Image (cartoon, rainbow, N blue to C red; front, side, top):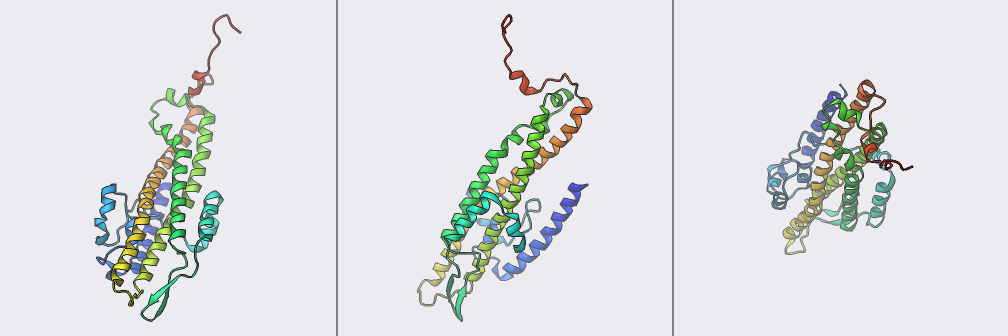
Length: 278
């Protein structure tokens, strides 16, 4: 029942977020060149990402991948620990209140963007956190709790291992939530900057259009690895949720079907003394 409710809640959030994004981009942006919206699309092969052929087909979001962007007021509450500290360090090295020339005066870039140095620093921090999530919690998926197919297999799993992995799965969920929010904030920030750049006028530069296009292309290039890793960590989260549910079920099955003499799997690796020895 909870899974169904969560799915309905997610679908509703997808509809709202998708509508808001279309309003932000506007019909006029379709087919007009680079857009950071591609970073929210499902993962593609590296060669496809490099070509970015699908950038010109408008804004598309995978229903089973989209996560609603967190409201600004929730950001401070959702971020914690090492990730928040590392991102704060990146922000401290940025430049606030960046402006560019416009036809009717200075164009102030969105405050989320404090220069490419700060932007790339924060992206690299997110990539590092994604790698840590995989290395710190990947063993839960490798335990293949979903693969158990009989009572013997269930009874040979150590109950303390189940409890520990269930706790770790909860820790993963909290860290994944923070990482997901920060991923979407950076992608949203790039989209806001692209909107700002549409108002920029470099009339004094003979190659103004080429410069602005290059700036957009640079933002997309910086986001490329983040988009691919974002997809991987979302896939990891799906597998983790499935493993977590399996652990809960196995914990209920053990006392129902297992004997007190059942030998946990890891106990078989304990060396027994040689006959006649102490």
